[in-house]
Image: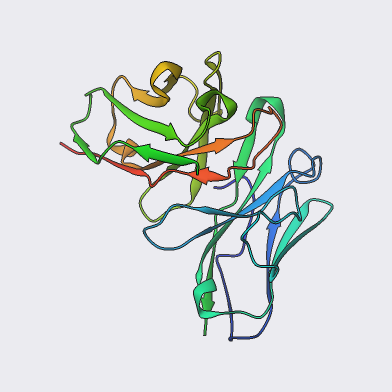
Length: 111
Length: 121
């Protein structure tokens, strides 16, 4: 069982918006503004999409945005495109003994 | 451009030892820490641990502490992940990834392509 809880799957049509939730605890998501999101296409390495809750690395489209409220973080993808179909993982810093925890991943299907 | 090149796929028997590698290029190897992340077949990502190549200071995830060893040789810009006695449950893809040299972070901005390790009798 993963430390952070994500829905197993979400879906949306091209052009629509979807949101993926990531629920942790007061020991990880709730305590630090250190939530990141990774996109992984089948057979490929993960790619950083969001870091420190809502920051985008250069080269990541502004269709991707992140937020956090309490123990739950969210990734929103607006204007869905076919190439957004992938698995998405949230990740949180969890203090100086556990350090880093991932969510179980969410499969995004673009209908 | 930061690049991480990982060693090739391995097929091992239970009980055997193994060391896989991750070679950094395009940057000063001691400027970023190296993390290792496991992905078991059809499963999600799991953080294993990390190393500061400048002084080989390491942190391990609770599930991996004592089961693997992370090391680095800055003279050849290479980090390693090592097992002394493999189990079938170690079958997975192992990724290395860089982070800035800060303890409190989970921003892994450059990833290697992954190395498949298969452990089977």
